[in-house]
Length: 261
Image 1: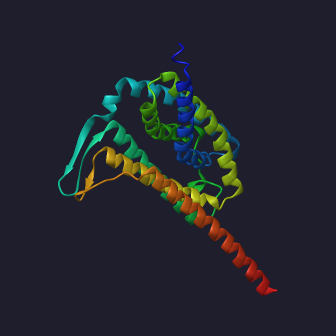
Image 2: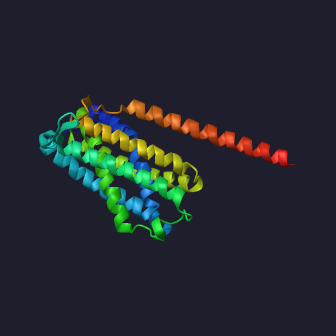
């Protein structure tokens, strides 16, 4: 018992909570965007229920991965089109690849919807997603993001209670931050565009990671994963460009207003 409650385990717990917070940013963005597809009065409920269910399933997934980590990383299918695409799929890589493709599809669809529809307050053809549908997608995508965080946690510790506690703490933080992120996007609608392009890059990040895990080669070139440092650098550049463009646009509008006077 003393070894389980050692200072080392509490230090590792703090590191894992920080790691979960960093890795959870893209998940938060998806949750905020997905929850907006239900009626306004149900959005906070969808976020909390979705994250709450995801916490339970993430702990169950932690049990499963600890018990069968080799099965998740063992090849399950070969892809062989010589000279075009070759590789070996694993359960882990297949989930990451499918999740990345789905996120790219979601981002492109929402960007198209934003530009094509005259009514931005409603979903396609005026139909919103059901609470059950939104919660289901939030839980599924949360599990996609969970694989990396769980495998990263396993690299730091093998103590179950440390990893499970980090999952619960990070889940509670996500519930609070998801409401904050959603409220910010609601007050600053223009940042939805930035958020969707960030989500698009997250999809590319996952696809590149899944391709690397599968040892995919395209036309003879190996698929390399996008480094997390590269992702955050691109994110910082996107935010900087958006802020500079917004300020410059305000100055142009102010100059035009003065010229009219």
